[in-house]
Image (cartoon, rainbow, N blue to C red; front, side, top):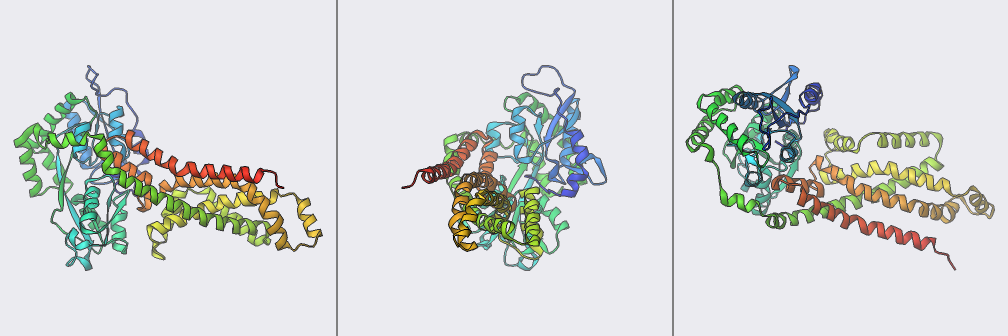
Length: 508
């Protein structure tokens, strides 16, 4: 799943193993390749965590997970060795189409759009979308219909996300998108959410990790995991299907799923249905044809993109306004303050400029949650504003100090107070000098607002990523996203140039 379990400690522990395992190999299966290669390159997201793919906590040199074992069985059935290629979950489709690996397997969901655009294997695991709530709410919150006007979290670009998007219209609940499957459950326990909808295997793992939660066993919907191959690579797909069917018949897949404690009676019934239908299981030509329609996809997602563009604009404007105010105060303190004030403000500027804004957003939203639980929208504005205030302050400080000292001395000689010197002489000239860099920073902030998706704000880039993941291509979503960013940023640049020209014009 999308960024499942982005546990920093685990990622660090497995870093060496992932680098070694992710080395690209030129010898791979392809539609044009005639010779049998030495390896089956399979792509997955090791940040996804158990039970899919993860670095072994006891031995960081190896990967574990049921997708790891299934990939090994497929490679063995093909008579080759498996080689893992690390890729983010959202990029699996695009990477396999590029030829970065032969097959993507990391909790890849079976959707009509994916079947229409890629060579997909038969499903090998069926999961249930289930609702998890706090134990105190378990009796009164049992279904999506009970969650009217409440916040429900899930992973973006998934079947669960589409399910909640439709439920938001039907039941009036608020869908909250996450980039990982850890924070939805911790936010649920902390009271930021009222429910989480995700795959039952993920919910079961979360229940062992976070106390005070209850998962209702009833399925809201069902989905299946598949392997995805590049279009035109149907020959390899058919060979892999034969291997998967053989491993279902001889009980190998059942053994793997039992080892990972994800086998149950529903899974047994599912495998019997797959074996009875063979390679035709799950085919839906009408759904696949509808998924190929680019105009239909654009019509479906354009309203969401426009709403997300509005969110991006509001966050950027609010954050920039706050950054300007803070920047002016910091610059004034560094120019006019006492030594201690200047030292403290300089330290702030260096810390904010020297650490990633992404880290700052995490700390503000998640790190400080034990003391103050800011709403995601507020945390996004505050985080961006605090970061950009450091840059703005440097612009204003430089502009203030660029005003010739002779003019300042002349103003003081004429009897102006220090406040009047600043208001009438220094600030007007400094503002004119600072205008162009301010406009550049606003455009940069507009683009950096894409980072706030990590704290559950679905802005323009995040909504585009969801569109691309569900449509199987970044081309049309990327072009639409770029056009919307240009629509937002070009008027700002034009306004800044007009102001510069006006202030540069000779006065009467």
